[in-house]
Image (cartoon, rainbow, N blue to C red):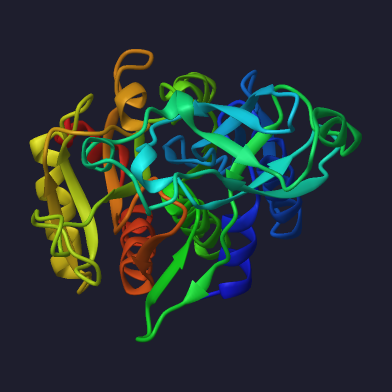
Length: 349
């Protein structure tokens, strides 16, 4: 694995609709590994390597946007109100460090304000503060000081967090692993895959606010088969319980709020995993959603399924994954490319 690549991908600030920094980074990487690319109208980057002797189009999609905030207002004392982009729980935000990225790509640290624990009334302690009440403290004395820094309404706000290995091999934490861990998987896949088929890697935008780049990318590619790579909730902690766990293998996602995996495709992947000694597990819960929600409904309908990486503490300043699950996912994608044919796709529909 390349920890350097994972670290760089994860730490780039790029929220939904402001994915320019991550997309520019991806374009540079694609140039170094010999891929051509196109960009759709939502700024999704579509990498491709063609095989003129084989018409099969094999698409892998991973969204590159992260959740965050934008600057909503600046008061006279220099405090900044935030507007959420994507799904947050305010309980996890107070007291955390954030980073503001200006339109000129200057970055400034800020602290999310919180109430002091001493003297808080019981009824206040027992409720969660409204997201609209959250604010950033830049450690300045006035609105004029904020404006002098070049910070303006609409500027991007993301968690300030560093990618770090934990205390047993494989366990790693960072911000934005939803979905930069999958972005890393797709980059690794593109580096290692042969073009037995026509390979398309869609780095999609605006997933966190409605799976939007998935629809436009799929319409451009017109794939025969497509897989979304994303994260799914790990249920292996004292506070979260389900059948997914870190270091349990790549996840075959059966169902979520906007897609249901075709039964034949699930069985095909199970057999492929067993044949190639790939460790796998399942996700079976009707919550959340991935790019698959729009991929499978595009055009005349696309044979599609989500492969997931289990993740702890999703949509917070730090989430945790296990790199062994990442490697199993890459192995499965490579095995699919080697095995899949147009005839097999017809059998799976």
